[in-house]
Amino acid sequence: MLDKSLNVVAVATKIIQSQMAILGSQIAVAKAQEVAGLSVTSSGMVAGIKGKPREVLQALVSVYSSLSGGIVKDTIKPLVSRFPEIYFDDI
Image (cartoon, rainbow, N blue to C red; front, side):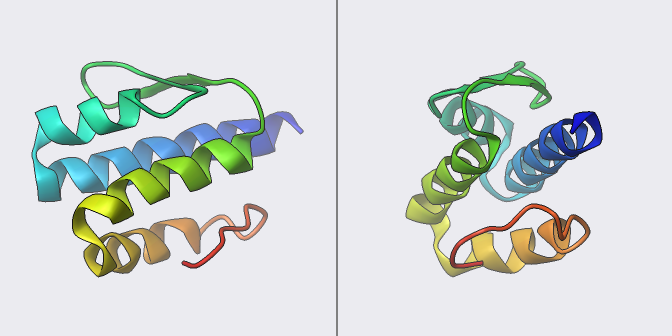
């Protein structure tokens, strides 16, 4: 269970960092900080996840998808494929 929790934090951090390259640091971090249950530092690192990790990750992806649609899915898909134990809807 601990490894999965670490993987969720790693995936969330990678998602945020990939969006920082696309949207810019300030916008990407600000949007991530709006996600309920997700604690994000100003540098884009995930400090913690509260609640159901899969739901928090799904909310993170949804926030970014609302901004840049298909680009998000194209950039996130390779990241999440490295963690098959974490299932995502619509990616």
